[in-house]
Amino acid sequence: MKYIDEFQDPELARRLLDDIHATVTRPWALMEVCGGQTHSIIRHGLDQLLPEQVELIHGPGCPVCVTPLEVIDKALEIASRPGVIFCSFGDMLRVPGTGRDLFQVRGEGGDVRVVYSPLDALLIAQRNPDREVVFFGIGFETTAPPNAMTVHQARRLGIGNFSMLVSHVRVPPAIEAIMSSPSCRVQGFLAAGHVCSVMGVEEYPELAERFRVPIVVTGFEPLDILEGVRRAVRQLERGEHTVDNAYARAVRPEGNPAARAMLEDVFEVTDRAWRGIGVIPDSGWRLSPKYRDHDAEHRFAVDGIRTAEPAECRSGEVLQGLLKPHECEAFGTLCTPRTPLGATMVSSEGACAAYYLYRRLDLPATTTVREASPVV
Amino acid sequence: MCLAVPGRVLDIEERDGTRMATVDFGGVVKEVCLEYLPDLQVGEYAIVHVGFALQRLDEESARQTLELFAELGMLQEEFGDPWEMAAKEAGTDPLEEVRNP
Image (tube, rainbow over all chains, first blue to last red; front, side, top):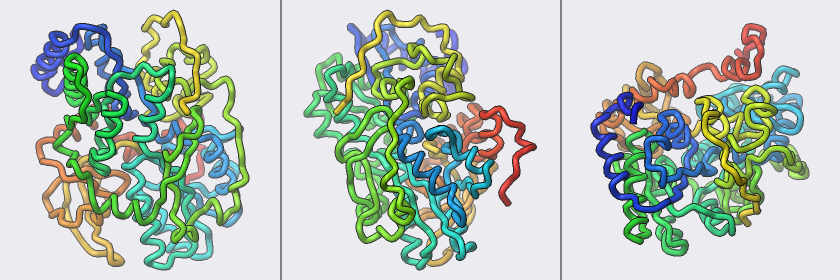
């Protein structure tokens, strides 16, 4: 535990770790769903502080990583059109589409702008009534409510030159898909805290029961993660499988009702492709029919764009917890943050980027790499 | 983008029929929409994601998280210049980039 001194509360960290070490009697594999948690784990070496029997598997919770190549290509196509101002969060700039990214589109003369909030894009639309302003609406349940509110506002204020390219994803169907895979090794989940801040925990008991898997709602500070692991391991050792909220300071059981109501109004559940994984039923949102006027996919007629994922990138296996980043042949050689093959490397929240950034090349490669099988 | 950051409400006003706040994130100040936490008051803390307050947070937790994010450089990642960061990642000299106004 030589790095423990850097924790905000080293004494509490030590106590949590002692408790985990004392509790665990056999091997357990836990999946942290959120990319922020993955970074915290690798950055603080939590996986090395935990007992050897506790394996942390990195889940698919990075919105940038899971956005399908096809959607990136649609974004690039729209952003290249004359008269369009294409607005995006900054972390989408370098996500590779086929042959290029938004950063390059801007270099070629496209009007690509980075916004902090989707409301900034709406403001740009108000100030540029003669231009078409498109916002790239990706993300999980934490990001979807702000984007939903923005579409709602566009409609309320009659801003007709604003549309959104929507590719939102939902966590519970991903958990279901991961657990349904014959290759699945996950025995417990650390659920993404901020997703639950919005959605509450109501979607999880059914999953915990059906797959007999503990689901512990967890924050992403080091102590939060240790506490999440501690509670998950306790349940596993006792043969329990319930939903437990270890992040109560930010998560109410009902989530944020106003945000949930807006999600229901603006979006409808749809099947969604996940980059490297494939289509997961009911795993996404698209604009509901009453907001279709603001759907960029229809407005710019890019529905027909179909792109196959590159075979050499194994990010799909990384996203499903079947492969650790450093086990990929291309990791750190063909594939680096400067020359990413896939989004798990280019996204700052991606598992491959976390391993690259924090130099986890010292880890021994495992002897066998599981064959990837589609989760659905 | 996945990151949600705690911030303290400095000021609240209505704009275009929408409740908006000025929020301080450990020195960086941003406009934040309060439509999802309409009863949030000046001086209170909330978790903010892409310009929207999503859930209340107590002051102590908010402070600890902000300190941690600052230490890890995550505030820079969230609020820094994304073009500069993208150029750096791409290996391009950011000074050669033409900036959008």
